[in-house]
Length: 70
Image (cartoon, rainbow, N blue to C red):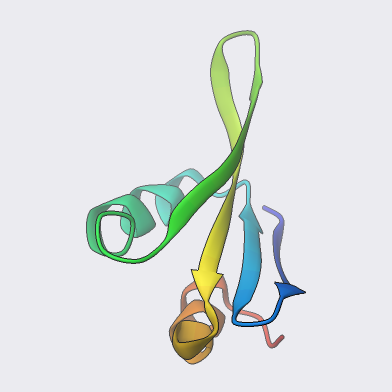
C-alpha cells in the first residue's frame, strides 16, 4: 500500500494513503477533530485512496500513523 506525506502550505501537511485499515483508523481517531479530507479517489465506485489535510502540529502523529518520515 502506498503512503505519502508532504508539505502543502504554511501550517499544513498533506497525507495520501491507499491502505484501507489506515483510512479507517484516521476516520475513527483523527477525522472528526483535526484532519480534513482533501480528495477521495475511487475506481468502480469503491474507494481506492484518500488524501488528508493535516495541521503541522500533528506532524509526528501523522508520521507514526503513515509509517514514514516527512
